[in-house]
Amino acid sequence: MRRLAGAVALCVCAWACDGSTEPRPPVTSVEVTPVDPSIAIDGSIQLAAVTRSGTSVVTGRAITWSSNAEGVATVSSSGLVEGVSAGDAVITATSEGVSGSTTVTVDPIAVASITLYPDSAAQATLIAGDSLDLTDTTRAANGDVLTGRVVTYNSTNTNVATVTLQGRIRALAAGTTRIVASVEGKADTADITVVEPYLLVEVNDNPLPVTLAGLTLTGGRAVLYANGRYNVRTEFAGSAPNIDTGAYTVTGNAITMTPDGAGLEVGTGTVSPTLLAVSFGTAPAIVTFEFTR
Image 1: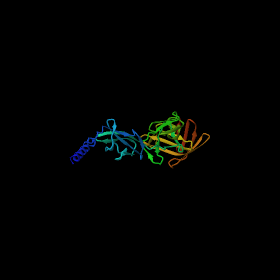
Image 2 (image 1 turned 60 degrees about the horizontal axis):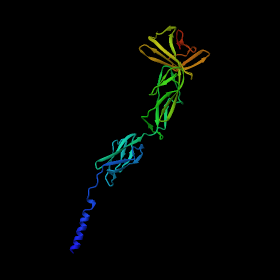
Image 3 (image 1 turned 60 degrees about the vertical axis):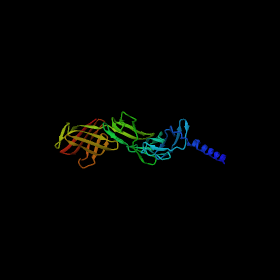
């Protein structure tokens, strides 16, 4: 009986002295994989965390996950990362006070198209010396408008017109050019025609400035567009400019200008590459404008 009791005591001692009573090795490092991955907005990726004590992998350790930029990417308690918006987010796994991390890049939605206004289907005509601000819209494949994309602009004929980094066209000389807007491998174009204006130099054979109806006329210009339309701008001291538009016809060097509004009567005169002279009104109230290039 004493021998049996001794054997039982020996077994209890062996169980109590088993290695399971020894402290577990501490976590000294955490490795997060994959390293620096990229995902799309609304995309996801499963991360894994390997815990080590020294060089040995240890398992069964509790891990908590966190993101330093939840507006860019969120992470679940199991390490599943979901993209929210374009940017970088540092995802960290922590176990027993020790952390490891990886940087997840959320790629912006790809640009599928860019629309430039005016575009090739809506050609713009500018007057030498004037400017025009282009507008553009970038869209995703589903049609959603994308913002914050860097668009570059180029002019195929910088002698006719230049374009700034911000998309402002500066018309320089008569001719045509094409403006190309590019973003992320997509492009659209705007065809630009530049015309030289005729500059007002005399009214009723008197050099500027000239006083008419109590206003001092200080300058002006006339533009004859290829589509048969004209635009005349006259400038006055201390007063807003006056803009007159209408249609014109040319037979030989004889020109007839028919205003859109009722303010002026039909004007007749002569036109050449360097001179435009037009008389409006009826006697005795006839006003003759002379423009030169």
